[in-house]
Image (cartoon, rainbow, N blue to C red; front, side):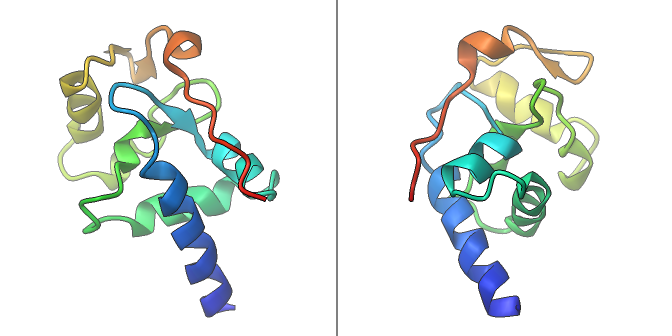
Length: 110
């Protein structure tokens, strides 16, 4: 099972590396692109495991409504928000402002 998770995580990271600067996507959109629509939580686990991987912009992955639900996995209290804001993404009350306009839909990787 561990090897399966590592393979899934690497597929998640491949998609996350493609998220354009200043854009965000959701755990569910990534899961759907991987053909595993019910695996949004597992995508979240992959994002949590991405710490230390400087080439995986985990801060660009939010929940389906644009909430920064993964922020407690970043160092400090506001690092996820700070990283997004440094890319021009506005965040208010832990919510991405104009989420529908900056949402990036990953390509299906089937």
